[in-house]
Amino acid sequence: MPQPSNNSLTTLQTLWGLLVNKETPVKDGLDRLINLRKLEVAFQLTNSQHEAMSSQLDAVAEWVQNLNHLQSVRLKSCDEKNQPWDLDLEPLSGHVNLSRVYFLGRLRNPCMVSKFPQSLTDLTLSWSELTEDPMQTLDKLSNLRVLRLLRRYRETHALHIKRLSRASSS
Image (cartoon, rainbow, N blue to C red; front, side):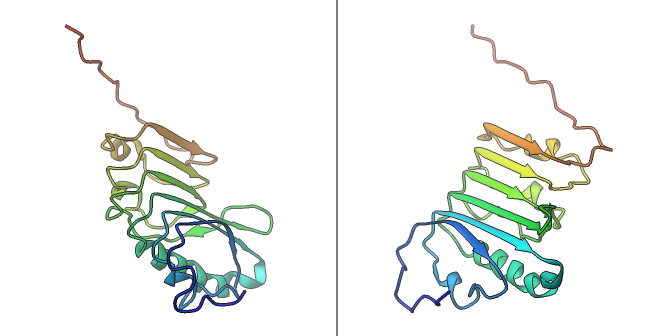
């Protein structure tokens, strides 16, 4: 994949369907696309690539942190057998425009879920392997309208959902 020149694609707002491998120029390449509003990135690792892809995962995590206009992000990380792989991300609390998040992969940063921005309206966590109940934290997201916890939210733990009270209409 050719590296973007210094001024090409700088106004790009959507990058969807990107498959990152060990040769994809994320650092000093794609990370120059800082005006993105929508981003979808997939990683598919093979047994021989785990070490090389670790730096790519880190580079994408850093890139996402610098996307100040981000409204929607989809990150998928799995191996050649479609089993989840790591997503080692920093909290997205500073992304005030972020409304949609879809993560497929094992979330390695335990405070990630507790630091989503208040602007979040749609959240999907698939194969996240969360070890703690996210409901107490997600309950604080007043704009959240859609929540999907798919495939393996540590079946050994129960989700605790507070009873919702309705305001009286008098």
